[in-house]
Image 1 (cartoon, protein in one colour):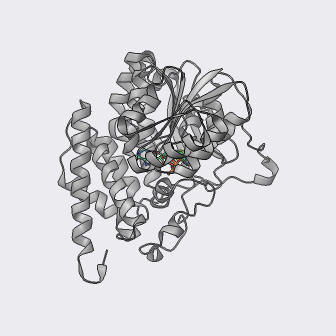
Image 2 (cartoon, protein in one colour; image 1 turned 90 degrees about the horizontal axis):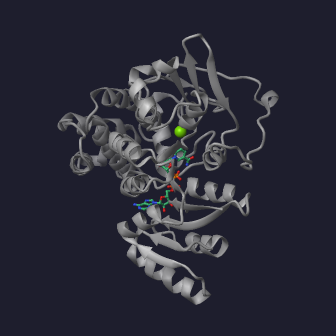
Image 3 (cartoon, rainbow, N blue to C red; image 1 turned 30 degrees about the horizontal axis):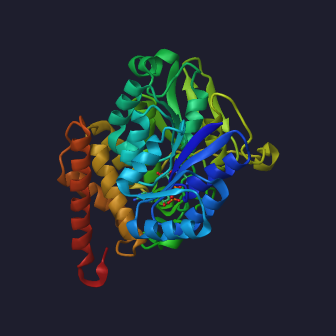
Length: 407
Ligand code: NAD
Ligand code: MG
């Protein structure tokens, strides 16, 4: 039996991971589960999966959970904070770690899992955007196996030659061209506002932005999909995972979300991975890797799908795409700044203090007010992250105090 720790077990990816694992009794054992402050859901998971360790980021929630597991006589250790998260990420009984916390909060635990040479299933894309080189270097040094969970990156990984290894010495030094790859076609649905009148976009509500046509996901990534910053972050994520430049990646809008991405080779072959839009497929792929196992996802009915459409992305309507591509080209701490400003803008939007249409401007102004430096160390990255957050919050605050909240 393989031991598994799930960082962010109460979220959309966490719950899907537990669903896949529950379909294979005797194959995996849950070692540790973590959440931010969702006591009820974590307690339910303790009853069902009997982890050895659970971690709540929030102290108050941890105290509450401790009382409740004791009252029920469950044999589980409850810990808290950053230290607790890192314990879950490096637990000696876990061979596999699912990194499924949302946002920059996942950076340190993900890095801890990488350093302790786990098989790391990477759903949490923000750490790759903000500190991709550092994660890759540490993975190479420790010999950790990194497997992409983001559906597009998982698809690309499946379409690359078998000898390609994420953070592999040879793959990184030779590049994709040496493997006969001409370009990567990164697909995206275009989100809920793909064909909305741009005039109506400025004031959409969080509920409208979170209603994705094809995928059911957490609120942050749902808003990112609506601004298409998700595709922008994924462009940078792909550069990190596949050791390539942004010019080797084209974004393709594909509204049906059946093709999850493609790889084009120099001989004209284009390989694609298809499937129903359900994250349990990439999760099962990475859990069973290098084998295969069932995921609970229903087989793709190609006759029901019937047609596949493709369009170029509209970066006028979705300026975040261009901001992310520019940031990838600049490199250094520019993607760190982009990610931090985006997280702050999305939080403000979800909290009702920033208009949807202002999200790209907040990111652009933050990028414009800070200089990108080489992202050589974790300290430099963390400092850029903090400064960018303060800067973005300042810009949002200024806008917020304007008469009539014209934001
Ligand atoms: P979610 O909001 O549903 O879940 C996030 C999890 O992280 C929860 O368990 C939450 O308790 C925990 N968490 C939140 N803030 C935390 C903090 N400060 N400290 C510790 N734990 C914290 O998010 P999700 O949709 O499952 O996405 C998780 C990650 O996977 C994101 O980075 C997202 O971009 C990526 N991803 C998600 C999907 C999807 O279909 N949901 C697809 C591709 C990639
Ligand atoms: Mg994706």
